[in-house]
Image 1 (tube, rainbow over the protein chains, first blue to last red):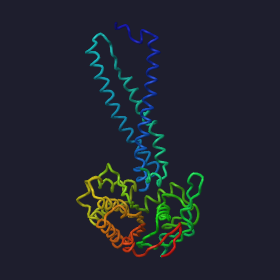
Image 2: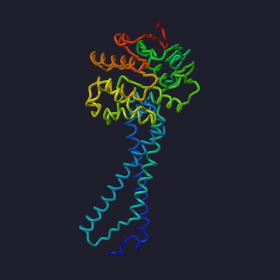
Image 3: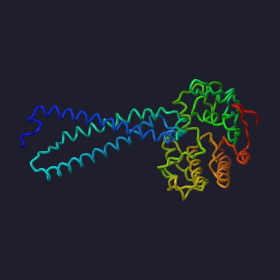
Image 4: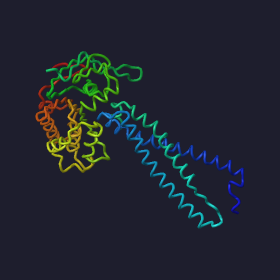
Length: 139
Length: 223
């Protein structure tokens, strides 16, 4: 049984690579959309910041800092979650092998951080470019 | 003394779809430092547009605008943002406090945006004058309308702006709180020689100011 890993079945490797690619794309889209929505919801608050004289760099800065914090929390929760799931699977199916390696955790963390920053940058830029008068009138 | 606000033939045209809407059709206004001025007029007469231009929230279409020595015709968006940060305090009808922050953090935020160079003792003077000492740790939803507006005034004046621009500051308040807020503005004007330009519908509010300017159809019709 333990021989049935992706390393021993070349076709499975391709399949897993495709799954990872889809997961990355979906993850990126989810981050992008949630940041976009969060920022749209706060249009008026961004207008307030602009009326106080906040520059574009200031607004982009606070949005990206918030994103980084959220991403770090997400990474920690995700890693802990993966570890718990691993234990559950091993308890339920002792014959399966589940590998959680540090290098893959690091790759996933880097991907999450870069993905969320890239996903947040475009909405942040949009927020920074808002017309203050329109933003303040936003309901 | 040089006027703090000087506009000559100031025009602003908004483009709504394919139609040009003239909001200001040639405003001439002179305000001296330390004045407390009311601008009154019917809805849609261009009062708010005038306030937004004087505060650098939006640019003029044509004409001359000079505020505290800054000529807006030569300023771009980033220049106007910097100008707003250091020289203008806004007070709005809808208070516009950040709902997730306490009164203190709302005030601190203005200082944080200002960056260096603010006076750390000013917050005590302002908070005491506005009677906010025991309200500082409350969030906006735990404050009455009058208290929220006082926090908004504190936020607007904390960085010692050259001009305080108030857009219907008593529009959402009852008579008692309106009077309180007007007294605060009056007091700020006296104690700190704060130049205040206030838009209002309310004749009682206009009565506490030094001078009233009437607007109609995008022009100043009488003083």
